[in-house]
Length: 76
Image (cartoon, rainbow, N blue to C red; front, side, top):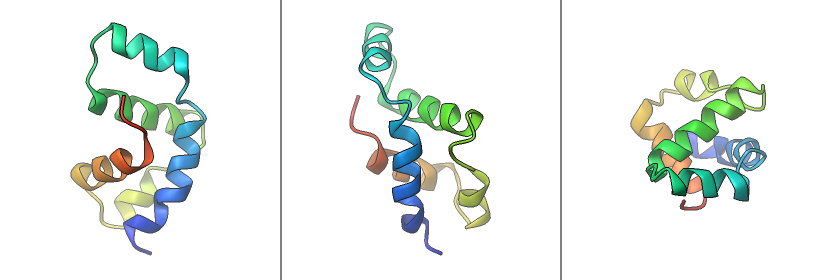
């Protein structure tokens, strides 16, 4: 399975946590878009909505995962 094949499940898991209020908070704190993407990922992982291990087992490194995150999460 290619990394790109994980995108629909990743997007679905992240969008559960991607709220207007959270975006407003991150903007107010002047957090980077990268920080927001990764925090959303870890929220999804902690909530059991996504298994990040599937990406690492598919050969991804953090740069690959960030590329997927940029595609999955609308810009902050």
